[in-house]
Length: 240
Image (cartoon, rainbow, N blue to C red; front, side, top):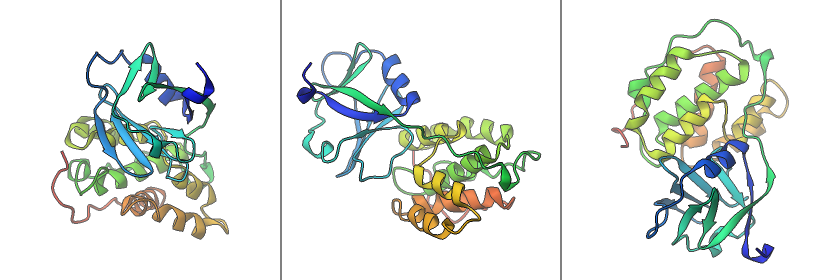
């Protein structure tokens, strides 16, 4: 296939594995489109939210990063998997490079202690508006920070997994990524810069993500690192 007819992307290894292991899409309609915006789109990949994002957008850990402007030229009327390969409007995706969405290792922040008391997961998962409800973003930040410090949280992890059905597919996918220590690069950059001269700039870049997502991720991470309770703000009802 000529490079002109492929869609070059950057992918995280786990996302690539997920695509390769997905069953072929049945004839007829392609994968369900969950959301479409100017710089990002999400499809339902066998019960998992796969992102397709422009490099100018924030890069979630579940996304393929397309070339500049490529997403805008795709109708996404027919997205499907065939023989372990993703096709976008009939054009196969070609992985040009890999990227790593893992949180940085920041043991100097005081990790490794006993598991903290679990937050009120039932009051957070799925609570709030949008594709990624604010309660979920708070938990994602909290989980990512504990992964960065090497602090295990098995009780919270079990509670989160038990409540994933209560939120949107995209948010459940991001919570699963946080459980594995994967997050947005903006949160990873803030974690790596904490306590240094670049921390304020990294915090500002993180809070600029989305309407409330970046700010909620930052608050969740700060509560985790400060060993403060993750308090449940007043949030609208469950998203799903």
